[in-house]
Length: 453
View 1: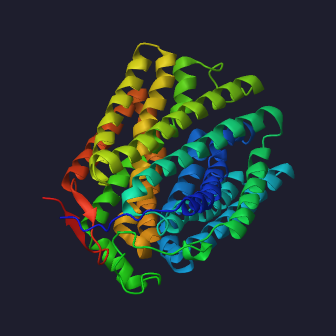
View 2: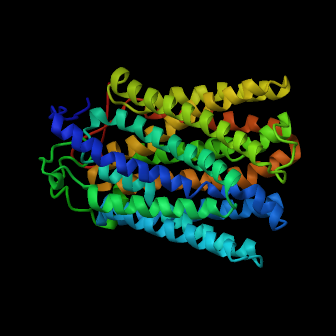
């Protein structure tokens, strides 16, 4: 049986301070997205202005995905050692500097070796971006008991959705009203502001904010010296000898391919199938690009918010804080969403296509927030939360690289029916969840897992 500790009764003052702790932290993570997916927003203009092919532009994106994937493997353990607050502030300052550099270079007329330069600069930007999710998880792990982390997973999914809204809607508005390179400069200013806010306001633990620390009931809650980071060798040994964590890593590979397989290619899908603009990304009339990006941003955001909250509520209230059953069900619903998209394409139904991408995002963002934002805290424990979050996020972005290069190649060959590949990964994710269906964290070390009979 599970051996989770009882959830403490939090005072109103504690809940208020906890909210004020994760709110700026979460907004910072959303702004991270603004300084990450601005590349997607600026992509059409960049390809036109610098005569880049889709393959060349895709190289920039894949370079960033894979730098991110490698970086979180190192930055997760680093954040566990230095603390989540320092990690997210460092990452925000770094990403702000890189976005500002890219914007100022384009402002000054940069036009030679743009492909090589952007691969380098965007790759370094993604290094700093990789501190985002794992820092949020690290800071929040001592503030939330296992039995209330499903709700946090929902909040985490909302933050991801809000990040897309900032990137696409605000980025589209910037393109419509200002010079295109401002999509790099504006996020740099926002990241710099949020880094300062986090530095002065966020606290790593309840004790630092004047409240008592408590037993969170996760995998490291009974460890001696649990406030001290584990030695790297022991930490990695715990992670890779934990069947649940390894299963979650493989599952997040599936999530990464599905997530970017949809979101990276959906704008091109709208343009080529439904001719929402005159049919070419090179045409960027301000009103049309604003309508496209604003509409796309909101269907993603609304879907993500619903999915995040639904997944968190179901986990805590219907499955006694077990994460795999909800994730498994959400994997199955992703299949329905993709099939709706193909149906919308075959029957030329653009409104259904818009609905379908939002519907699919419900189940994609729900799973992503649950596994990276919640399960990583549960099974990594307070001492290893950032490392597990980093492993899960890294595997997801490694898969994203294949969604860029690999799926793009297949799309060129067979068209949009190539999206039928995505349900194969959803089915795999569901089968993986079946193998850990009853897993819950067990106190006394992250290598232990309790299974309900």
